[in-house]
Amino acid sequence: MTTAESASESSQAGEFDLGATLAERGAERYELHTRYLNHQLPRMLHTIGFDKVYERAEGAYFYDADGNDYLDMLAGFGVMGLGRHHPVVRKALHDVLDAQLADLTRFDCQPLPGLLAEKLLAHSPHLDRVFFGNSGTEAVEGALKFARYVTGRPRILYCAHAFHGLTTGSLSVNGESGFRDGFAPLLPDTAVPLGDLDALERELRKGDVAALIVEPIQGKGVLEAPPGYLLAAQELLHRHKALLIADEVQTGLGRTGDFYAYQHEEGVEPDLVCVAKALSGGYVPVGATLGKDWIFKKVYSSMDRVLVHSASFGSNAQAMAAGLAVLSVMENEQIVAGVRATGELFRSRLAALTDKYEMLADVRGRGLMIGIEFGRPKSLKLRSRWAMLQAARKGLFAQMVVVPLLQKHRILTQVSGDHMEVIKLIPPLIIGEREVDRFVDAFAAVMDDAHDGGLMWDFGKTLVKQAVANR
Image: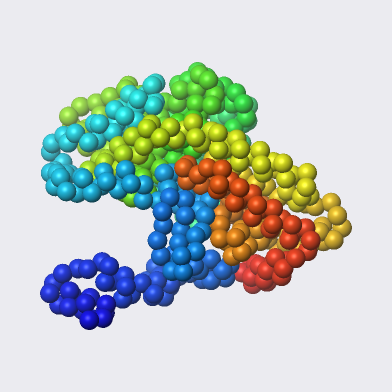
């Protein structure tokens, strides 16, 4: 019997067979996406040659049908902190499904949310309570609502180039105009430059600011707050009776070599902290808004307000089990210490290349959140080619590097933001020296080609034509 016949028989019998469905229809993946979902995604993937077919994944690697491995330096935008299909997380999810818990009754208190909150707060000693939602943007939305309510003020400050999510509230504190354009009116929030304490104080003097929300290291461009900024900002905010919100959706849970990125600066104790991504184990969406006791008690001030902020799927058993398993793995496998060591090795290996390649301008970041920035070369021949790309669209050279890393070296990376000549590396936190060696060797080979005027410049011309056509 063929696979298609088996799937057909299962369907006629009223059963659903996932394996048979994928075997029968999986090859249609790009066509289905073009027809029913965001049609620009497959178009973009075809254009840059990223239209791969990955059959399975494990740890820090994808595999195609021929068994070729692809090194993942993207981690699903940071979701796959422990890599893909970590056995401990998988077992926890099998266990929670097999337990057939009375989940989401809405009128009881299941143990898993309390256990996960307890474990998460153990890493957050100055925070007291947790609200569980379903995503990073939900965690931010909760923090914005809480801050506005407890201060009685309408305005949130955020930093230029920030990314806090794409729902309306979090979009109002998004520092990139490309995401905001066309979605007005948004909330009356105000951008200030990252690190500019004078600008922060000018806004606070107006008396209507509820909070400042800040990424300790911005995902767009991998830009870190200057030393001392978070502590000084916290003191300014509290002096003006406003709150500090730390968005740790991408930087939290060990990404930067501490459990939270704000912990790199002694004395910083945000009033609210947002986490998500890696807490999911890569399986079940989850977001968490952590806060001080007095904030939660003011928001949930009476039984009449018990559901004033809630989420239909929040605290579901599968997400809670995944989160508990993730934190257990992080503790038992000493993930944070490993990130610190591997990150130092990775950055030092890459930084050593800056003297060799004139278009390699900077290597920065913390832990396993690394930015590689490219800049204008000195030699005349390379400068003319660089100018051609910049005239068409800023960010094309970074894209020129990303593509051969995948096509020639089977390494998946990302450009760190629109109109930026920066590649961001946010690999699974479990990588080690072998993965560092593979990336650095491949990156050096791509840079050799770029500086020698090799074939990647032909692809650059294709990108220029595409950029001009899209104007």
